[in-house]
Amino acid sequence: MTVATKVAELARWTGWYLKEVAGEHDYDRYVEHHMRAHPDAPALSRREFERKRMDERQIRPGQRCC
Image 1 (cartoon, rainbow, N blue to C red):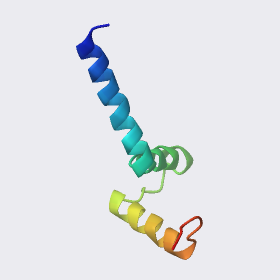
Image 2 (cartoon, one colour):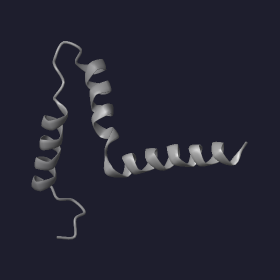
Image 3 (tube, helix red, strand yellow):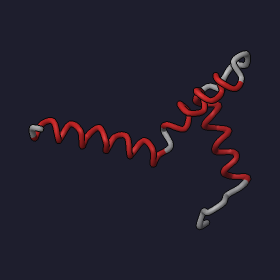
Image 4 (cartoon, helix red, strand yellow):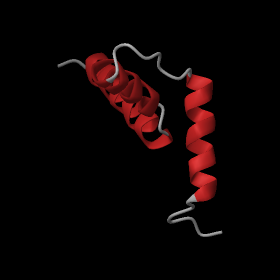
């Protein structure tokens, strides 16, 4: 494995990790689940999904410090 290949692999892994931590993949998972579970109903748009997620966080703050 060359250095360039290792750097590219590290960059891909880092990108994946940051998206996981930031919740970027949550919408993709939601759409996949929604299409399997509710194929006849339209999925929320990304904007609607994020708004709903933020509203739920405000209602149930969970482990927030403030």
